Image (cartoon, rainbow, N blue to C red; front, side, top):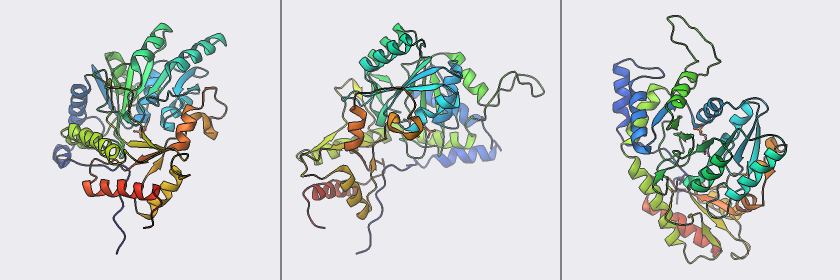
Length: 383
Ligand SMILES: Cc1ncc(COP(=O)(O)O)c(C=O)c1O
């Protein structure tokens, strides 16, 4: 029997409507950043998230970078960031020559632990520096405890950037992730719930912030007939072609979120009696996750020693792509000098966790195959 087609972790999934918007851009020769598709995609995102304002950019990383600049983060400043995240959450802090201060997760949401956040803020202030911003991440689509995080941040008058790169469609207490903090960011990278090939957005209830993002992302060009610059700019604006893809993706965003959520419920049901397997599922119904990726933890004490690494390697033989969890930033060699307020939670999760194939285009048969294979591996059956 030939080898089975690879079942990927998370792939782009087009609606079929994208070419319509791209062709329109070609017809109008709008093959540049900005343009009608960018305007319309911003309107779509505004409506979908309920954000007051949106600026579409070249990537989620660019959006975080501009968010830091807009909030005045500069050389020598300190910025608190969730340790359990992808490096793109923290890298822009270093672009600004500021210092990342990492804070650990809580076990329920895997996101910023409010008590540790407050402890870190107090300690930084005691040492002489009030953090300039907080980057709160909604990891794997799971909403962070935004009520508590915002209450603490407001009390210490520190602005919050919500990294909702993985969380479009996720809600906390009915409100879209990314709309709690002063600034939110989204990503439309190829592996996300919707893809524009590459792309991101900065969202805010403050018009000036989104206007600044659009201005800075187009080389900070002042409104003169010639090129006049009073600030350093960036080439971070979204391409009108990418925005055309985004418009086509917005038409089916709800379906894509529903399918990713369905993947999670499927795996949970299919594996419910397997000892040693637990899921990232959030504390209660206030935490409405898009379940961008379905994530499991494998406890080797209950699986006769079988670890997530063992499972991942067995899956490779079966052409099933899985991925370990994000390695926490405080454990990354590149950030080893950064202060970290940690209690072992994200490190423990990193040592146990595995992301399962979660594409919105995964078939029922493929999903079943993944679940059956996992069961077989844990039961140590021979293939
Ligand atoms: C948590 C998180 N933050 C930021 C980013 C950066 O987004 P982008 O790839 O669009 O730059 C990503 C994804 O890539 C992410 O997963």
